[in-house]
Length: 272
Image 1 (cartoon, helix red, strand yellow):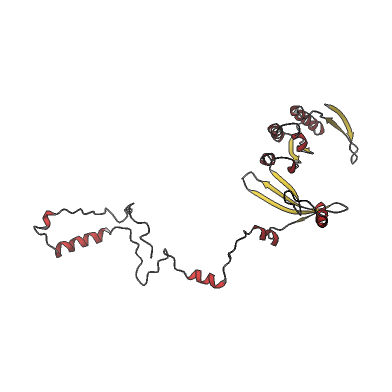
Image 2 (cartoon, rainbow, N blue to C red):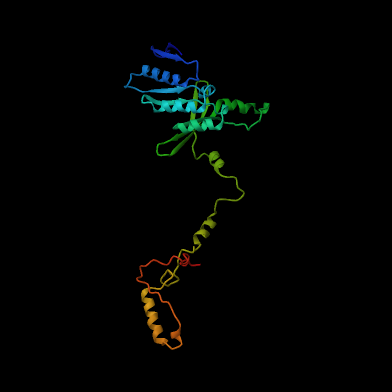
């Protein structure tokens, strides 16, 4: 561990620096970052940001769990306001990027405008497109909120002689919308005539009544109907000696508010 000072060319101030030659000892790196941050801002009165130039360089000497642990300690420190990390995704496995993205609250991804497939080499005809990829790129940002929602922002960046120009890409862009539609061989849209025909279709649960009061059969007769039918049956058909030898079970519902039986067909109320 080497320490020194460096002069800020934009401000007439001296900043203390610390050089870590052994990246395998991440605990010393963590303590060095905290000490330098406290020296920059007054302890207890300010906060500082931590910028890691390349996490890929640290992962060459340390394991992924160790790097994730150090980042978690930095993020939970009281005086650390935020952490910026740069990762070259093409140098690592997918689980490395997924782990760091899980720890972060914002994920920014820079991609070239023209992407090559795996194993494809550039030819002389592709040189204009390759040159364009060096100057232009796609910038995707994903913000993760505390309530679990994710906000996505898409921009395009163009490298000019004097700087970098960034333009916002609308989510309603035709190319983007077209790429989101699955490639199918049938038409997903309806014509005006098809919409009208669909509106005229009578669904089974839409009772039309046909001029009569709509009554939904619940599987049982009401209490009044049962009493009337019983009286009518006793008048029309007197009991005989032949009928006295047979048994019959008659169920009387206590009230009309009683729930229907569970073994009834739930689709009896449909006009099929």
